[in-house]
Length: 317
Image 1 (cartoon, helix red, strand yellow):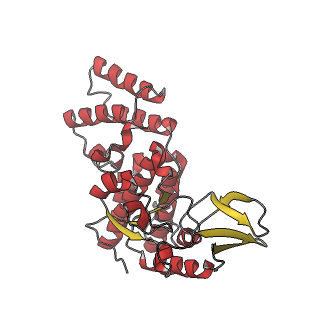
Image 2: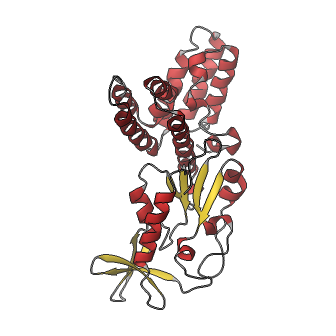
Image 3: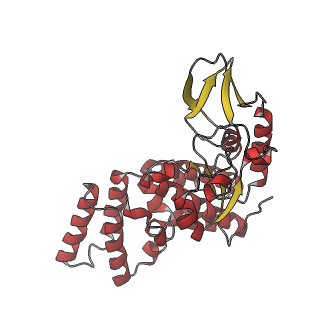
């Protein structure tokens, strides 16, 4: 059992992605982003489900087979390992309560989240329409857990979104570990105001309304809140959403900046909206003004620092 540790952000990962020689051919699919960048800030919990169910390496490859509408995992020798992979997924999901995210190997018949090749039982044709057996069990059992494939993490927007969700869930897990109270819930939501707004303004408002009366049912409302929060953060924040937030933040400095400074900030936000500058540009300028003109409410906003800046995730979005 991987119990939650507030001092460590733990992310599950397909063993091959950190260089373990666990693939069917005895090789690996080492991810540079995971091993060289993310590993500096998180603790990986590696697992290869195919090894976990007793298959060795090297081993016969596995295929997903569509047999009369049922998805089966079958080795090249004809061995059906579907139920063993499903059981592994259920068992590991029960142990993974302390994780804050999971990175899976793309296209894998056990770990792929989408577009896994499925072969027709007749032997005629195939289509990229499946989900890995192990991955499907994790996705079903752990709906709040941020899951992503290694290949999709090459996309700067998807990468930033995944890491944002990992850090947000860990923050929530720390809150639960400390103890839920109405006051702490309100403070938590207040800190996430602008991050949630960037992803979906209406959802942010709905989450605020959910917490408007915490005189009863705190535990139940907390469960509904984190479900809604993670769903909101799973929606990719585009330039329109970020621009709306940046303009809101700009308003806090309206009476404190010179005309030249206000024009520079407005121009930088406009250039971001037009795709000329990355998000980091207006964020950096706002941070600078926040240092010059301290504001306790803005200082607590997760939007300014949703994850370690050294990951450089806002350079590419």
